[in-house]
Structure formats: C-alpha cells, structure tokens
Amino acid sequence: MNSKDQKVLVSSFVKEVNEGLTAFPKYLSSKFFYDEVGDELFQQIMALPEYYLTRAEYEIFKTHKANIIHHFDAKNEGFDLIELGAGDGKKTKLLLEELLQKEHNFTYNPIDISENAIEGLVKDLNLEMPNVAVQGQIGEYFEVLDRLKQMSDRKKVIMVLGSNIGNLLHPRAIQFLKKLCNAMHNDDLLFMGFDQKKHPQKVLDAYNDKSGVTAAFNKNILARINKELDANFNLDKFIHWETYDPESGTAKSYLISKEKQTVDINGLSLQIYFEAWESIHTEISQKYDDDIVKWLAKESGLKIEKSFSDKNKDYKNYLISK
Ligand code: AVI
Image (cartoon, rainbow, N blue to C red; front, side, top):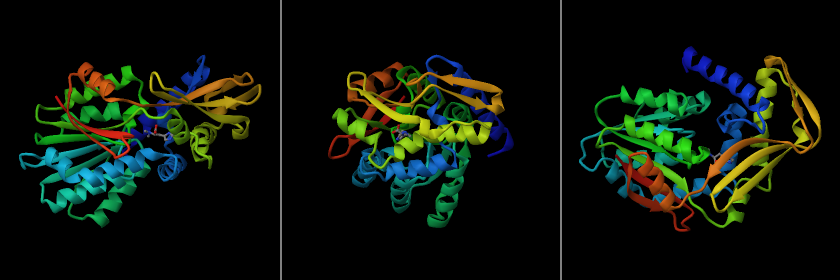
C-alpha cells in the first residue's frame, strides 16, 4: 500500500470509531474487522462447519467453472478480471486455472482493503500460477472504483464474491452497484455472490458458531481499538450477539456490554460510557432471493443475465450486465 492509501485508511478508522462510539445507538463498521488478527480469524470462519457460504460458492465454481468462464470471455477477445475484496483468492484460483487451461487472454487484478491479504495473494499466485498476469491493489471499494475507469479499454469482468455485498444495507448496496455500473462499458460484466434466504437457524448458526471464532472475530474490533487507539476495552465484559430477521433477510451482529462501564480511548481523548446491556452494532450480513437481487440490479441500471446455484440452493452467483 502506498503511504497515501495507508493514511486514508488510518484516518477513516479514527474518524469512524469516534463517530460510531459517540452516536446513539452505538455502532462500528465491519470493514474495520480486517487487521492481521481479523484476517486470520476470517480464514478460520471460512473453514467452520457452520459457515456454509464459502463451501457453497466453491461448489458452484467447481461445478460450473467452464460455463462461467465461457460467459466471461464469450468472444475470446481477452479481458481484465477484477476482484473486489479478494481475500485469499482460494475460490478464484479455480476460475484462473480454468482460464489458463482454455488459453484465454486475461489479467487478474485483486483489490482488497487488507494489505496483508493482497500481499499474500500476489506472492502466492506468482509462485503457484506464474503464467497469470497479476496486479494487486489495496483500497476501499468505493474509492477503488474510480481507479477502474482509468484501466485499459479491454473488456472488464468485475467480481465481488463471498456475499461481500451483504455487508451493505440495500441503499448503500444500490449506491455501490450504481458506481460499478458507471465504471462499466457496455460489454463489461459483473459476477457477484449473494447468500440466499434459508432456514433462519442455519443463518444464525453461521454467525454464532459453537467454537466461538465468530465471537472472537467480532470482539477483535475492540482489541484493534485498544491496540491502535490506546484504549482499555475489557473484551470479557462484552458478549457477541447475533439476530436474523427472516422478513428483511438481515442478519445483524452486536457487541453487548454485560455491565455499566467506562472505557478510555486515549488516542481520541475520549471516554465512552456503557449502560448495562447497551449494544454496539458491528455488522450486517444481508440474505437475498432472486426478486431482491433483480430489484437491486434494476435500481442500479443493471440486469441479471444468468445465475448459478449450489445443490442446496443456499447461495447464488449472478452474472450481471449493464
Ligand atoms: C465478509 N462477509 C461477507 C462475511 C459475512 O458473512 O458477512 C463476514 C463475516 N462475519 C461473520 N462471519 C463472517
């Protein structure tokens, strides 16, 4: 990450922690989960028996990879594959292998907010798939979208996997999709993962696993504030709490203060008061069905071309055009 990007991320952390913890009700953005510890915990989440999302998307890629990449480059004229929120790229590698095997002319451009994740992924790909032209970038989604416009004139396929869009409420998701639409030329495609509505218990379990990894992931945001802003949150005085509203399809994560307490955030010269059982809202993980995805696309000037599902119909990847 260049030092300007680093500064932007650091200053948005300072500003947003300040705003969120002095607001009522309190909130923190889930984008701040992903420091080195958070990245590692998220890797563990993706391997949890309860967290079906990653396996479902992997299954879709394994089963439909030939068809998917055929749509990416139907005219065989070459294209740039851009992945927003790439993480460790494990699922993407299935598509990259298929693209190499079928001798498509493409570049791979993973973009992630985590410097750690991008550096690891690029290094890893250079070793594992030296024939893939990779160029990693670090940044937040919205900010990075502007850079997309300045890329080559070749066809672009923009991927947002892992149901990452689900961390945005519908109005912000539409804002995001509109920006994507704006950055796209007529032939460009979006390929996006949307976790589907299902038995509410299955959703709740995915975000409240028995082994407590998701709880540690959620609480890590407090540990991060302790480390980076010289604060004294006692993580044992908070519990992780998950809710799911089957009507709206919104899963919400909270941290709840078990007692009345005061926390000092020295780096912000701030004292935060908590009532007993007061909450900090930390994340939303939206669940969808075809109608909701169609509506989001329409509101954003986009249209769904095709979708791919796993056997259980837990999860879908949609091919979307302008
Ligand atoms: C990255 N994002 C889509 C994950 C999700 O499912 O909302 C993050 C996550 N939070 C708790 N578990 C996983």
